[in-house]
Length: 75
Image 1 (cartoon, helix red, strand yellow):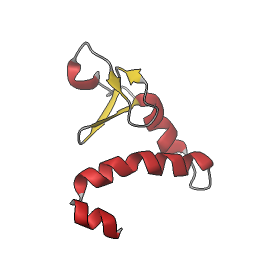
Image 2 (cartoon, helix red, strand yellow):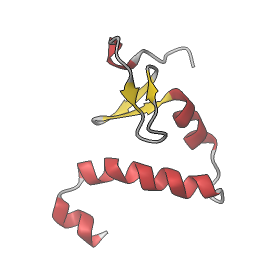
Image 3 (cartoon, helix red, strand yellow):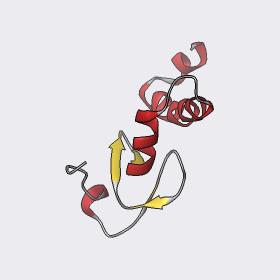
Image 4 (cartoon, one colour):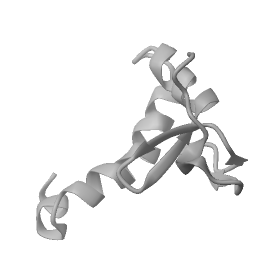
């Protein structure tokens, strides 16, 4: 993973959407930050893993940011 850049090239740590720990390396998905470790865990998780359900729940925040409130209630 050579192309991972420090989050927003700033000196402060950011809270990861998944693990909620403060980290400095990761990706931004809309206004959310996902650390490198969690990104790796999400990508390698299998849909039958219990952790997969946890990741879906945490990532729901991103979906909610994309859809208007009225649409979120119907999904």
